[in-house]
Length: 273
Image 1 (tube, rainbow, N blue to C red):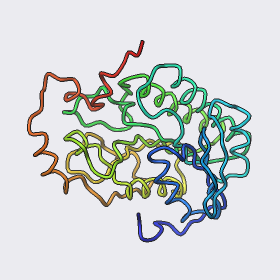
Image 2 (cartoon, rainbow, N blue to C red):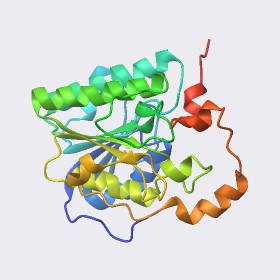
Image 3 (cartoon, rainbow, N blue to C red):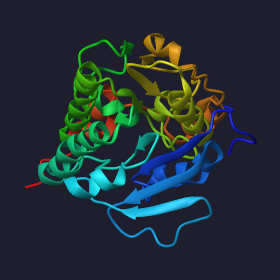
Image 4 (tube, helix red, strand yellow):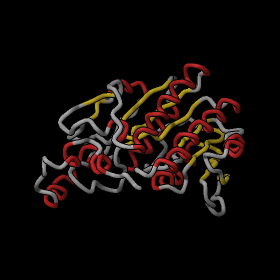
C-alpha cells in the first residue's frame, strides 16, 4: 500500500461497488485516504462498516437499489459485476443491465464521474505479437469481454449526451505477482492499481478516456498514448519476477490459442451448456 496519498484532493463521499471482489477488497482498504466517507456496496452482505464507511447492499440489476446507492456521492469506482467468463445470463444481469442501471442512476443523481472497471478482454483476440492502443477496434474474447465493450460504449453515450465523465480501465492482471509469462505483459501491482484509480478520479478533465491497466512492464502489448492526460505513471514492474516465471514456464506452445492471443485462457472458455 502506498505510504501516502498520491493526491491532496479529497472527496466528500466516494462509492465503491463490488467491494467484496478481489480488487474491490484492495481498494476498500486504500480509498479512505482520498475521501471523508467511503460508501461500499456489494450484492451480498459486507458486514459491519469500518471507520469512515457506509455499507449498502445492492444488486446491480435492481434499478431502485442503484438509484438509492448513488444518492449523495461525488464519484463512483465501479468494480462490481461479473469479472470472469461465465454463461450469458449472469453477464447480462450484472454487466449489461447492471451497467445501464448504474449510469441511469448517475444521471438522475447528478454524479459526474465514474471509474469503470473494463477489461483487457475487450481486445483479447489480438495476437500477442501485436501492440495495440485504445483506438483500435475491439475484439472481445468472450461474453465477458463483449459485456465490457458494451460498458465502454455506454460510457461514451452518457458522456456525449449528459456529460458524465468516465475513465474506462482495461485492467490487465492485478495480483500480488505474475503467475505465468502472459502476465509478464499484463501484470499490474496493487499499488499501481491505486495510482491508476486515483489519477482517474483527480484528473481535471477526462471526457471518456480508455486506459490499459498495467504496470511499467518491459514486455507489453498495449500503448497508453491516448490516456497520458490522466497523469497515471506506474512505478512497479513485472521484471523483478521474470527469472522465476521463465524458470517455471520455459516453453511456449505456439499452436495453443491460449499462447497466441492476448486474452490467454479466456479465448477458449465456454460454452457452458
